[in-house]
Length: 143
Image (cartoon, rainbow, N blue to C red; front, side, top):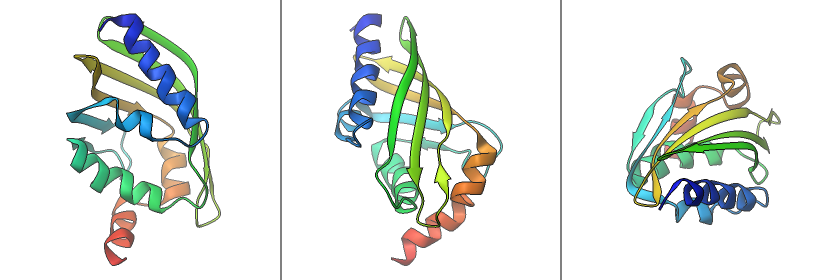
């Protein structure tokens, strides 16, 4: 797969996420993909492999949401194995906070699927709306 196909994969992922459909993303990642949240927040961590991402990032994150998470692509730029995406997300949390982060994602592809994601966003909003990462993990473990 090449640059055009990689960019189209990201376009399809976010077209689905505009409607709350996360399945396209799940089908578009390598089993050993890495997701790294950049910055200095409690959520700024590196998750490696589908199981680690699902268990230690997505499960605690989505457990905080009261509504369906939606995201849309604003701009996509691709070169070689990389696609850079400007994204707007929006969801209401169970605590009543609106989590409407603006992101820049850097996706690296390998063999037509996402091998690495580096996520840049408003880490202050992340902490205010979602609370500390460790609290989210404890809440999931308690249920």
